[in-house]
Image (cartoon, rainbow, N blue to C red; front, side, top):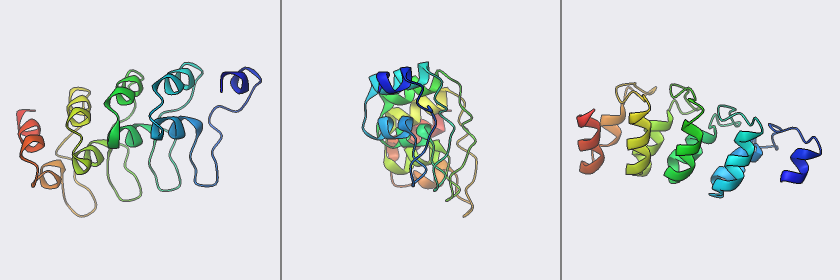
Amino acid sequence: MALLIKSGAHINLADKQGLTALMWATKQDCSSCVQLLIDKGADPEFSSQIGNNAVMFASLNSAKILRILLLNEPDLTIRNNQSLTALMLAVESGQLNCVELLLKNGANPKRKNSKGQDSFDLAANNSVILSLLNDE
């Protein structure tokens, strides 16, 4: 990857699904790849065809990568095509550490999706995450 970047590869080039190298590195849980791509200017807010960005993908399963992405202060109000924010995705996935990181970085648990649900509604069956949301 470093060689491709050094050779001038377009850092935010997307595949047919709209996934960039940063999204793939995030999905594959490769924190060193994510760090390299971020250092070289990859855009953590670039959205795939379904509207997910690297921050959203990290919110689904990787607090370690989410920490790296949050250093760039991405817009946490961005929604995907299902009207879900990164926080909503983390809540739905039961990712306590990601929920905590997103809240500490300003994610709003009271934002509603297109169905009128907020993060509290999405966490209704997860008392640990619901407690964390209530602490904010």
